[in-house]
Length: 402
Image (cartoon, rainbow, N blue to C red; front, top):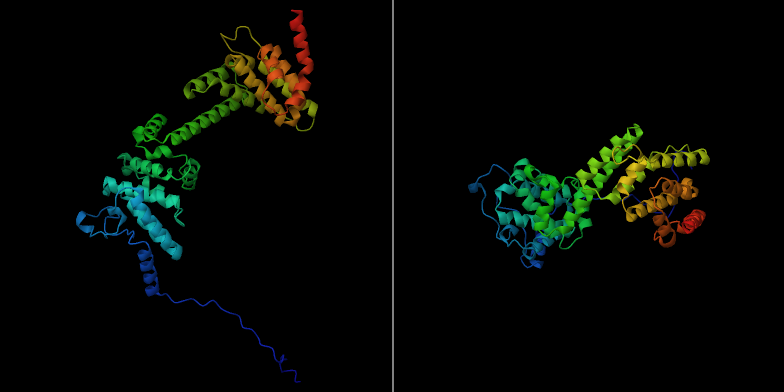
């Protein structure tokens, strides 16, 4: 065989690589498919056509609406739902049409002031059902972001729309589902922006949505505000402690924030303990040094001044200001228990911390004995009860002697 000849394998078929062959567009087949969907749904066809879809148009420019436009149906979910289902079926067959739907909805929502009140309600129902039915590919920001136009918000149009949207969506979905949509639209923290500027208060929010029967949304917002106030108070106290501020200044800050935020005393006690322990500088090298640092912080907290009602000078006075009952003292003791349970460095310090708080009159004897005998928090309880037993025995012996 010549060196120039290529070798061949007799009887072997050489496979050629298959290429993706793009199918030519077939408008006729597509139109037939749309008509078939229309027939299958007994004429329940939605059409966004004939009507102002952007600012600046006038009544004569509207043209005639299609007789099957959902804007001509009743403002009820049973009348609007077939339209949503129809759009859903079309999008499953032709997903690229989702962009057209986005553009049309954005124009409608930016032009709500050009719609009649019942038309805005239909759009709200349609939008809510679109998300409830998980309309393929429709992003939340397409529906919610265009609403935040100053002129629409100022006229109260947006608030009415979003209220109808929330009410409709929550009929079939949970509040968590709604919050998920708001998060995706990056509007979870901006719910007050739906209100006119003169009504952007927590009180107005609660009053409005309570009146509309959306109590779960009111409770969610109140909880969110409450958590934010707790976070702000904790941050402020942490900064003051880090800067070694005078303790009377710290008390003034606590009192002011408690009054402004209307924080319950039980939450104040929890925050004070968290801030105290966060301020401990752990070396991470020597366990005994860590223990001593924690105890020094506790003793610093628990130093008593008999005239604290006139001028608070110590951390113990600060705790005593809010540990005004056995229930609050018990809550503090549970907080100490959880802190020691979750931090291995503090496990062995539990009886020492309790003793320090007792010596400085932050924890009463009755509170300690109640926790020892009937405490309900199971986290590390057996270990802590055993470690505290010598101190409890001492308390009981002292009580018998008295």
